[in-house]
Image: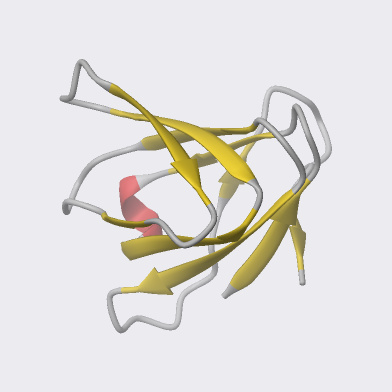
Length: 91
């Protein structure tokens, strides 16, 4: 799945989303993950493998597009935002 975030938009990916990896195709993204004390600042072309059972918190530092690769399931991706409406737009 491909999605786009505008600068300042937030996205939370939960373990039930069965995410295998995230590839940032354009822009810049800040990311933190559960069970990891480090923060990551990803630039276009970066790919991050996602460990099973972890939650990811992402913030667009600039407009960006990412490819989200699932673990082979075809379930819906649930998006958690601090607002009532999702800020995430599938491309």
